[in-house]
Image: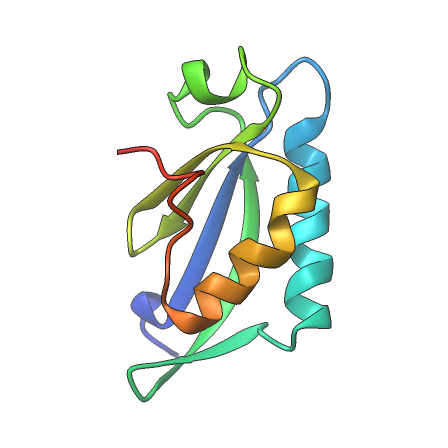
Amino acid sequence: MKPADSVTRLFVCTAQKDEIGKEVARALKIELKKQGLKKLLLGGEKRKVRVQTCNCLDLCKQCKKGPGAALIVYPEGTTYGNVKPKDTAEIVECLGEGRVIKRLLIE
Protein backbone atom coordinates (compact mmCIF):
# COMPACT_ATOMS: atom_id res chain seq x y z
CA MET A 1 0.00 0.00 0.00
CA LYS A 2 1.30 3.47 -0.90
CA PRO A 3 1.72 6.11 1.80
CA ALA A 4 -1.05 8.71 2.06
CA ASP A 5 1.35 11.53 1.20
CA SER A 6 1.82 10.19 -2.32
CA VAL A 7 -1.55 11.72 -3.20
CA THR A 8 -2.32 15.36 -3.93
CA ARG A 9 -5.93 16.15 -3.09
CA LEU A 10 -7.93 19.08 -4.35
CA PHE A 11 -10.74 19.66 -1.84
CA VAL A 12 -13.57 21.72 -3.34
CA CYS A 13 -16.30 23.25 -1.17
CA THR A 14 -19.82 22.47 -2.42
CA ALA A 15 -21.78 24.38 0.25
CA GLN A 16 -22.87 27.19 -2.09
CA LYS A 17 -26.50 27.72 -2.96
CA ASP A 18 -25.79 27.65 -6.72
CA GLU A 19 -23.84 24.40 -7.60
CA ILE A 20 -20.63 26.30 -8.51
CA GLY A 21 -18.51 24.00 -6.29
CA LYS A 22 -19.79 20.91 -8.08
CA GLU A 23 -19.14 22.57 -11.44
CA VAL A 24 -15.57 23.44 -10.37
CA ALA A 25 -14.92 19.86 -9.18
CA ARG A 26 -16.25 18.46 -12.46
CA ALA A 27 -14.14 20.91 -14.50
CA LEU A 28 -11.01 20.04 -12.46
CA LYS A 29 -11.47 16.32 -13.17
CA ILE A 30 -11.86 17.02 -16.89
CA GLU A 31 -8.80 19.31 -16.93
CA LEU A 32 -6.61 16.81 -15.04
CA LYS A 33 -7.44 14.19 -17.63
CA LYS A 34 -7.07 16.62 -20.55
CA GLN A 35 -3.64 17.83 -19.37
CA GLY A 36 -2.53 14.29 -18.47
CA LEU A 37 -1.93 15.22 -14.84
CA LYS A 38 -3.95 12.57 -13.03
CA LYS A 39 -0.44 11.61 -11.89
CA LEU A 40 2.14 14.29 -11.14
CA LEU A 41 5.89 14.09 -10.86
CA LEU A 42 6.84 16.43 -8.02
CA GLY A 43 10.44 16.54 -6.87
CA GLY A 44 11.12 13.19 -8.50
CA GLU A 45 8.15 11.62 -6.72
CA LYS A 46 5.12 10.35 -8.62
CA ARG A 47 1.85 11.44 -7.01
CA LYS A 48 -1.77 10.72 -7.82
CA VAL A 49 -4.10 13.70 -7.98
CA ARG A 50 -7.62 13.38 -6.66
CA VAL A 51 -10.48 15.87 -6.72
CA GLN A 52 -12.75 15.58 -3.72
CA THR A 53 -15.81 17.58 -2.81
CA CYS A 54 -16.63 18.49 0.75
CA ASN A 55 -19.53 20.22 2.43
CA CYS A 56 -17.58 23.07 4.04
CA LEU A 57 -14.00 24.34 4.19
CA ASP A 58 -14.90 27.07 6.71
CA LEU A 59 -14.12 29.73 4.11
CA CYS A 60 -17.67 31.01 3.64
CA LYS A 61 -16.55 34.54 2.87
CA GLN A 62 -14.70 33.10 -0.13
CA CYS A 63 -17.39 30.81 -1.50
CA LYS A 64 -20.88 31.09 -0.01
CA LYS A 65 -21.01 34.85 -0.39
CA GLY A 66 -18.89 35.09 -3.53
CA PRO A 67 -19.49 33.96 -7.10
CA GLY A 68 -17.01 31.06 -6.91
CA ALA A 69 -15.92 28.11 -4.78
CA ALA A 70 -13.16 27.66 -2.22
CA LEU A 71 -10.51 25.05 -2.89
CA ILE A 72 -7.60 23.67 -0.84
CA VAL A 73 -4.64 21.79 -2.33
CA TYR A 74 -3.45 19.15 0.14
CA PRO A 75 -0.81 18.46 1.46
CA GLU A 76 0.66 21.75 0.18
CA GLY A 77 -2.00 23.81 1.95
CA THR A 78 -2.55 26.22 -0.93
CA THR A 79 -5.98 27.80 -0.48
CA TYR A 80 -7.88 29.40 -3.34
CA GLY A 81 -11.10 31.41 -3.19
CA ASN A 82 -13.67 32.53 -5.70
CA VAL A 83 -12.72 29.71 -8.08
CA LYS A 84 -14.88 29.33 -11.17
CA PRO A 85 -14.88 26.50 -13.74
CA LYS A 86 -13.01 28.76 -16.20
CA ASP A 87 -10.09 28.90 -13.69
CA THR A 88 -9.54 25.14 -13.60
CA ALA A 89 -7.23 24.87 -16.63
CA GLU A 90 -4.87 27.40 -15.05
CA ILE A 91 -5.08 25.69 -11.64
CA VAL A 92 -4.16 22.30 -13.11
CA GLU A 93 -1.36 23.81 -15.20
CA CYS A 94 0.11 25.57 -12.14
CA LEU A 95 -0.27 22.42 -10.05
CA GLY A 96 1.84 20.54 -12.59
CA GLU A 97 4.49 23.27 -12.50
CA GLY A 98 4.43 23.73 -8.72
CA ARG A 99 3.23 27.36 -8.98
CA VAL A 100 0.31 29.17 -7.34
CA ILE A 101 -2.21 31.58 -8.85
CA LYS A 102 -1.87 34.80 -6.88
CA ARG A 103 -5.20 36.30 -7.96
CA LEU A 104 -7.10 33.33 -6.44
CA LEU A 105 -4.85 32.79 -3.43
CA ILE A 106 -6.27 33.24 0.06
CA GLU A 107 -3.57 34.13 2.56
